Image 1 (cartoon, one colour):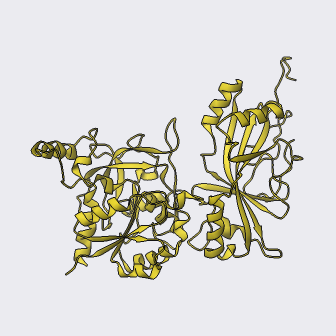
Image 2 (image 1 turned 45 degrees about the vertical axis):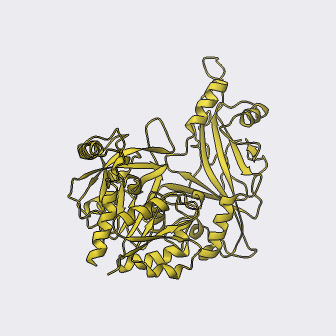
Image 3 (image 1 turned 90 degrees about the vertical axis):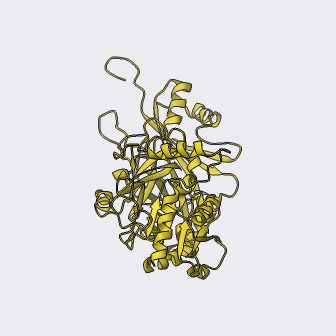
Length: 207
Length: 272
């Protein structure tokens, strides 16, 4: 509680992982190109794509959050996409233990201002909405995972998923960070919680 | 001597190949659409290459990223290395940037990032002005420095961007042959004359030799004088009004500002 006695609302982060219900042509093309044109992609056995949306601010309870996400056209289309919501590190992960996850964001362009305006109109709350593209990569058992050669574009033979001149890539495997693309959170005592860092494998974030 | 032949590369999703062929033929060149399913080696028979606008491979992963890895681009890179002219327009420019053919080092040095515009984001289309800069670019070197051309632009990702200072170096080295300008030829620094926030107001970047050009505006859509938008002012608007007044049937089959780049290519190929 704040010293004035007014109710202080904690800042929270929710992740929304959106994937296609049908085959995703973008992932199919990326897999085909990676396997046939990039040396680092030869051992790649599967590649899928999700949209990662992070909401940061004073968020409602989980059921209401899910209702808002479902009812808005700003986040996903339930007719052709499915969504998984994570609000704590204990929540189910969209990735399996054998998958590497790469989140690519547009540098300086992660914010979804239209979604933020919609949220304010709908709930009266100001929140920040950020979005990136998450690639889930799975390599053959025992194969090395030359992630950077697959992710960061250097030339026609190296890299596909992130052009480092305009985009940032963050990688993780196992338990996925939360938050991941939003700025670090400030705790009530003024210290900063663990936040997203480029290429940091795992972060013990807030719950 | 037969006219030089130009291949207009058609990846799936490209949608400006027909206009590009027409513009090349109006400039006196022989042009044909080269589909992505043809053997890449057949591309070696051509003298010059155009990558037209559109949405190659549906802009999957990132605009131009998938086409940049296509075997056709390996042949194109060999031809560019030999000095063959290569023009990438809009999505074609994105392919050239993603493949590293511009600015032409061994690595990918630039990005065509999402437009940066005040109070809006995403796709943006309008007629803009570009100014010709001092450059070895084979498509523009026949035009006087300072010439202003009105051209249409239409894209979501057209903001030339590199490591800090890289675009400035390219501009100093004559590798930004087209820069966004105001109608009077002053370099545009603000939206909407600078429609995407590109560094150095670059509308195009070429390699150091000048034979590979990646440009975001669409010259093929401004190949007819009659197509010049009524909002355009300056010399091209005067020409349009004058020639339109002469045409009894209001059909204005006279070359427009965009045709100048294709004429530049034709005159270069004639010299070779």
